[in-house]
Image (cartoon, rainbow, N blue to C red):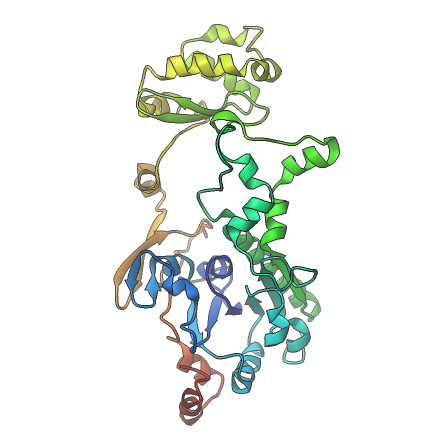
Length: 397
């Protein structure tokens, strides 16, 4: 295969969700990701995150974040492990980690520690609160970031308790941001021959994602709050509406769609109605819009409305996870991919969101703990006797 990142080697000291998600993006596109796992603590903690498992040390959670990678068991706290790391860095482009902010320097995986091994090495750090400042040594997780960055105040119904996203959205977005940082670092290093440290944190990404909501406050002191039915704060109709058998989300986020919707539901007079004719009027009379649309939409099932609106009115059915993964469109677009595991057989997962023209992306299941240790050590020039010695000292497994 000729994939965009073929030949890019990443040494990843990673575990759990955000970090592995970052490198999986790049592994899907052809990068060689060598996942470093401590043989003395069970490796990536994601291997034991339940409640669903394929077998010991291999959870559904772990398989969701680690496909197309290699696993090398290596204890970086031992001098022999540090020696192996430095030899590995000499052949790598990136050293990546998602450790607590104070740990990369202690483990010797920052640029100051590794530049002498390879001046062009790029060191990318994903942490909870960054590697500097008063919280560098703090542990942190997705839901905490959602809470502190205001997400819970924006999610759910106005009269309900604060609510988080149903997904670990900060982990996922921070991982994606870290993937961008890795590529930016390599692009620079290949141009000038010098690497550097690049940092992303869960907190910074969570705050950055406030985007226009933050700008509204910072420049106009407007505090955005939760709206009924997950509605847009300023556009209507752009929210949930009832149908005969459930819910539908309609988003007339351009003025032209209001006229299309009005005709599609048999109410062309709405276009000229002074209470409904433009964004400002509809926002003022949002309750009326909601009441009248509910009344009409509840006459038919969601699927009937989706067929009527298809390609004309921006609308979507409200599905649960099972329904979302089993649609004809998901099948048509080949969004579910089979990964082949030597012990468990076929493991199905969601495909990479990046499509590469003319190529099929790799489909190797996530590696077993230390699956590639001997192969990587051999590639680095270690003898069979060296490997036996390192195993005896628990440097590798």
